[in-house]
Image 1 (cartoon, one colour):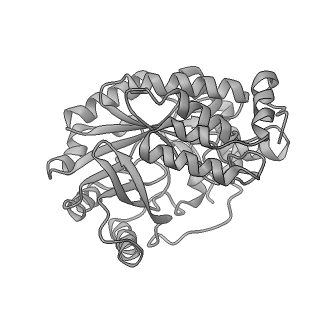
Image 2 (tube, rainbow, N blue to C red):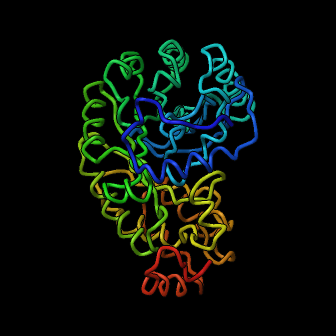
Length: 358
């Protein structure tokens, strides 16, 4: 990977020490990727304000999140999967889209009502996805029910979203807010914007007739388990109180390659969150004025959110059930002896760099 470096856009944002460390870590990447192949594509089900849809999730391979190329977030390794050189052409992105549609035809039960498009950066950043490509994608999916596009708050603008909403397509912007606590977002995640910027993005989305799906991060580095859970409970409710934010998706941290979290993990200074913590947050915020969901990536693995290993799949199934039905009683149907261990961790773990249980 070419050595990441900040450009004018990133200068003076985030913590300089974090950015310098992250640039060194990201430079270890030694793989290259085909600009005509998407990073990932899969079929799933999602709960939305319009109901539960079969969903087509697309992760386009772009030149990478511009903030990540400056150093970026402590837990995010997606830029390591981006195309070398910092840009991908319209033609290459459309080839990726064609591959995703081929996958849907082969794997899905008809066309998916919901399409989710991510870039592991900002779909609305025209350095990543040119305006020509954005409009072509809007035309391609104009006959679907709903679309979700990913963006940092900076790039959320009415005229960009109008490419979708003017076609009568229900449109949502997925914003990686991570936490409603500015200090945690700055010091633990190394994200430069504030909660007020998220509120402004929600207002811009409303002007275009679009909604917002807030993405939160359970247990970034430098928080204990109990601190992380408390932060998520506050953050879910604060997001739900913002006009236009109708869905909150809480992502438990997983240990991705070429990240600061991975370095801490290998030194014994980080454990991914317990799945019991996911259940605790979802159950306690089930009455929030928003759809609250979670999709623990890598559940049950050492590098992903996990419990003891025996109950992980059962707890994951309960979380998925809650996502679709929003019924917190599902969590009363799963139990394991390790829940007592988790309770001890919640009560007694106070140092972020010394997890009581790996």
